[in-house]
Length: 125
Image (cartoon, rainbow, N blue to C red; front, side):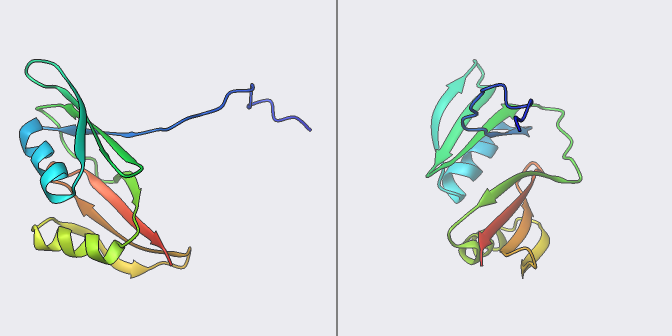
């Protein structure tokens, strides 16, 4: 049986696009607190930035009127969820869902970045 939705297309990476109200503040958080590095920026003033750390990639887009969604906008898998949870807590970020072992095999929590974007973080148990 052939899957007609395949069309012979291979998909590559996909990256979360996060809207931010203040590009400088957002970059400072993701680079200074979470350890990402900037690999690309565009615009004058800068309106778009690509950040990378290990296999993770985030795209930040300047949206001065951004209102955060009331749901998770990205899912991040990490090797030490407890350490990232401590970092988020120590930097005063809002923890939306506390750190817990889930019945689907992940230890996970959800936090809000400085722009209110909810990021679901998990580590396989």
